Amino acid sequence: MIRRKLQEIVSKAAGRTADILMPPDAKLGDYSTNIAFVLAKEQGKKPAEVAEQIKSQIEPGLADTCDIKALSNGYLNFFLKPGFLQNQLSEISKDDRYGQSDEGKGKTIIVEYSSPNIAKPMHIGHLRSTIIGDALANIYEALGYKTIRWNYIGDWGTQFGKVLAGYKKWGPSAGSGQALEDVTMADMLDWYVRAGKDLPEEEGQKEFKKLEEGDAENKELWKKFRDVSLREIKTTYQILEIHDFDVYKGESDYDPQLGSLIEELERAGKIKESEGALIFDLDKYNLPLGLLRKSDRATLYLTRDLASMKDRLKEYNPDTLMYVVANQQALHFEQLFAIAHDLKINTAYLVHVKFGMVLGEDGKKLATREGKVVPLQDVIEKITALAGTVVKQKNPELDERQVHDISHVVGIGALKYNDLKQHPYSDIAFDWKAMLDLSGNSGPYLQYTYSRLVSILKKSEILNTKSETNPENLKLLTEPTERALMKQLLDFPDAIAKCAEFYTLNALALYLYDLSATANQFYELVHVLDDDNAARKVARLTLISTVARTLKQGLNLLGIQTLERI
Ligand code: ARG
Picture (cartoon, rainbow, N blue to C red):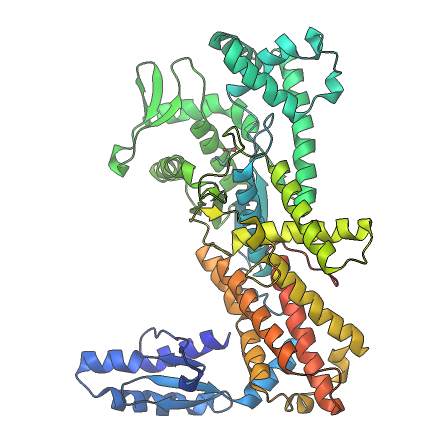
């Protein structure tokens, strides 16, 4: 907040956008800018002179905020005034919406994420999409955007032919002894894999064709498989504690429209036939051609995505249409976006938020011992079990139920934070121990910091610091660690805004980590509860409760829950 304000004021005085930097050394101030140096160089003037000139221009407006020093090398250093920090703390402590804003008011964003496939258990790639997408949607919501959370279920395509063929060969109707009601996603995967191995390719194709043509039996079965899958998927969402989706609209929803979509494109002369297939030439975009219909007339992933995009634009008229999908599909989205551009339908800003793979402790792509993708369920079980050990060690007196509940929140927090603290493009490693390290850059460390702060508040028996504090008290906050905490609180809105701007969560994750580190330092250095200066005690508790609330709100934006006790 303050950084942005400084940037505005300095930029106005300098006549161009100035960077506001964080000096490496506190002696050089809280913020600095080299804009005077840059201008001086261009205009052949002395840096010190230009710096002085800008300083005298902005000083009156910042009289209550900071002291400004102009250096001979052209740097301007800003030193926040204690009174300013204390007043800000007073404001923030009363503002339950701190960090939120109206910057997105009147704007709509569709965030598509998770988008698992039915009949196949969710895997680790879907985990990343789910975690990142959920948190991004939280951020946009906090900034006042109308946010539509869209789950584009993969529920159509030739692979269902194989599931159906396998089902008919080995499933309940073939005497497997199992009731159709009890079929699970694991069974479906099993039929799919077996059909791929033991049945001729045509079997699957035949079954899918029947499904596409509306065959009653296959349609019924497909519906059943879809229902069962969605139920399992939703259970996983509950475990992951993500926000509910606004829209579940998947690939099958667009199948009926594809005929007319293709006709429309043909009429517009946008697609041509090539060896029986229909293609969209993307040469002028330097991209390989987009395949919209295969020679056997089967439509494709790309075609369905195009239909879905048109639907999303028409239904919600969004300002931004965002897809949170793995790196591997980058080309697909480039093609999709190029086609949308070519057809002039992209009325929204289109974004593909890509992310890398999950690597195991050996630095290779995370896989089962047999080299297969790791089911999400296994990952969740492993991290919560490991979290259980950590929680038990810390609190031997807890009963099983308590350990279970706490380790769930801690485990899921560890999983999410490990993902979000890194830049999404990069591959992320699963270092299980580091993910749960209570003293490292981990989710549990942040959760633990929060619960420590809350326990001080509880012990103080001053439940409502808001009503007991006043700005006068806050003048007693003069320790360097208190100053550091007050200053860090000011950066919370900036961290959130950065996430929205760059479609990443790491700015907020790292902000919360820094805030926690400072809060822990404060906790070690300053005695809060046994302070005999009652007014200062209240002031410190105000600081603590404001930091705790900020931590909680920040973690919640990342989709991470907090506990009063860990
Ligand atoms: N269901 C796909 C998969 O699991 C992801 C869908 C991505 N979204 C999209 N609009 N194509 O790989």
